[in-house]
Image (cartoon, rainbow, N blue to C red; front, side):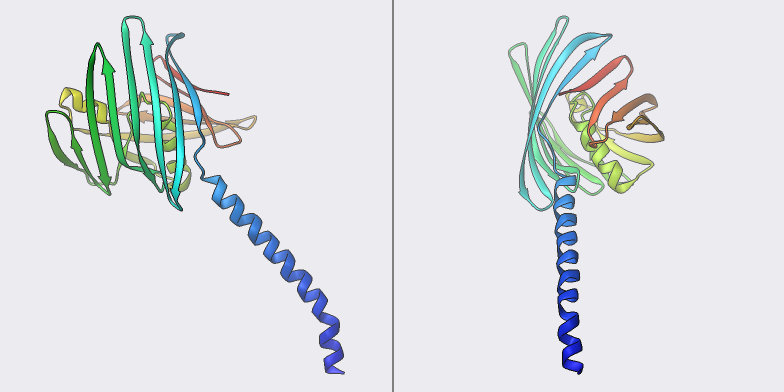
Length: 227
């Protein structure tokens, strides 16, 4: 009798196990794609005039690491320049960052590496190390796609304040870090608006239901994701 009862219950146990394994597989698939970086195109406008276009691509190299390449073409009034970035992202933070700025027949190269609360940098004329009390996040704030990275980090870590370093300011020999403070979040019709201050300048970015930063506005500058 006990053996008959065991055989009778076995199919039900198999069914439950299959359902569990299927659910686990779906969760694993969702987890692996939720944090995947997407190739994207962006547009930057200043006072409603087109000022720059940008393209970024990514390549996954390990479970928590991705390589990135971006090109930003600045063409605002008499300002013309091309910004190229490449490097490595690890756990939603840039750990290696290479920036080349080409303008008026010149090229400026900047490289940075981050490790916790430390940044080491090198330009064509200088090199050094920067430390802060908190973990440092690289944010060249006029490289548009980096705001997606800010949001990806924010949604996971939920910081109220981030310490950021702006590599482009090395051109002016500025090695300060700055405070990015998140103030509030609102939501309307599936669009989240996240309000912040960067070095006491107010700004806001909008995120759609696909977790894509579709717009960032600050000081008369509007950055948009192009579908």
